[in-house]
Amino acid sequence: MAKLNDARRSLLRAKESAQSRLTQLDSERREIRASLKSLDAALRILGESKQVGPGKKPTATTTEVTDLIIEILSDVGTRSTDQLIELVGERLVRIGKSRSGLKLKLEQAMKDERLHETESGYEYRSASDSSAQASLDVPFET
Image: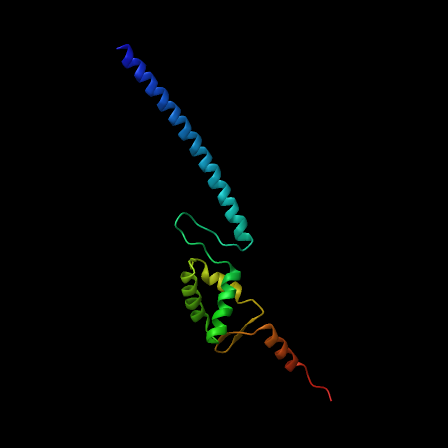
């Protein structure tokens, strides 16, 4: 009987030790999650992508969306906002990014000076195109 009591006490001590370690790990896990949340918030402020959780795709940054828009407009010419949302979304998925927040990032990207809205949609003008256009806008003096 004494051996059974000794075994029981030993098992209870092991269980208490495991429970204590589990509580400690849970506390560390909460601290790490809080730290990750703060880091994600800081990255969002800086316009960096955010990994939402395990197995989730990261979202694209505004810069990435702008680059994709320029790439698309360079390839296919003028496109409407709806067409750009669709085309950029397809390319994001192709490169392993989430479409989450795409409309907002597209709105922000459209403020880029290289993108110009026309009656038929948006078009891309390179820096050399923009400077050539600016020189055409200067009145000619005689």
